[in-house]
Image (tube, rainbow, N blue to C red):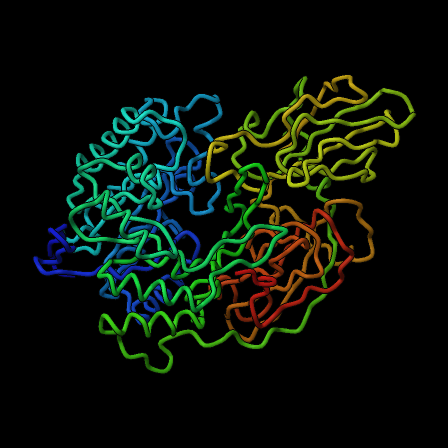
Length: 594
């Protein structure tokens, strides 16, 4: 891509000195298999977009403080280079807070272990690690700015900061200016923007005079633009998050935006001369345990699919919204011709179902030598965990009569057993923290699941696990042994025991299945018959399933598959006795709510 310039003019963005309307689409590289990035980027161009926008998730790039990675699925440089190869521009939003319904809003769990991080302020306990992270990201982005022949034309400072907390304005400005200094000091020359929902309070609190304000909204276009213009009197108007759908949480519906109002809102934005970033153009998948949660008084963990009701669905196929948005865009800009084969064809017919064989109890795969002994039950954060599962064990000696078990707070789900027999479940979403044990004697085991760290609001940074005390009939239980579940390499820990099919397993169970394929291909696993847990395809964790819905499928990207036999591993925490694993020829995202 040739060197150029990109500036903010009196009323327009200026590309090489000429007015330029940004027609962008959000595409998060970390939610898409890297070998499928090009397909999704090209589809955006074919819908008529000229720019790709992405967040940068701090906690993925630096899961351990000081250990930064930008390889494989985190190869931001490769992603931006592919954007350039497709002749498109790029907007990069490194946060450090990104929300995005992503685990912890992108903020790494290690920030909060001491309980006093000064989050999203100029407090050195927060700003120092932020500075180190941003400098590593900017080493990738700065050489790819438009003035250096790259695709990057805009960068965002923070993210919806006007909606965060009760921080005095001087402290807000001090923090934002510190971030600007990091960007400019690292060589960022492209315009810097902020985004907030277009209310007077949020727009006033979330930016600085020297930063260009943009808005995030999905309707009421004229009113939203009017409010935005009052706070950004010059330069281009931009809806940098045009919400064309929504995210889903477990136990609800598949939520999206109806086609007609979405089309009407997009048309109104473009008719007003505004620039736009369609959020999301393609949502992708919250692979492994990367989903976030919301808790504004009700705990709502986000599902694995980030389909978002987007123009390109979770599997990368164009939806009705794709064609409708393309038609709207064609009224205001040239759109490319689409030839046969330019877009992915519908998913092929599903393979036949295959046997699903139990091979081990989860407890059998845990290493007792890796246990941590404590007096009081520890949180996950005290054990150094960012996400996952932990099993706590202790001995009770309170007599043979039934007793009441009480946990101070459960974050987020706990399976209780006594002498190896399941007793019950305690769950945060149902506000459960007590149950009756059939006896006060025996070995008490509690398996705890983190269902995703809060990504929005005042509960960002909260610790996970069991927040004690744990009591039996009012007396605190002490003397705990805790083992972190090695979920990331669980498939490698399982011996290949096909003869275990008839062995009953109580509680959390690991199962295996094999599927034969003629060639690599995208697949959809139908999880309707399963309980709650995770699925791996080969060594790659696809994410969570849960019979509570709405989602009852897991997407398998073609690059994970191969011709011949493919091995699947299932961890079912609430096994149903299912003996077959099924596949589908469509995404099973649940009943729709508009």
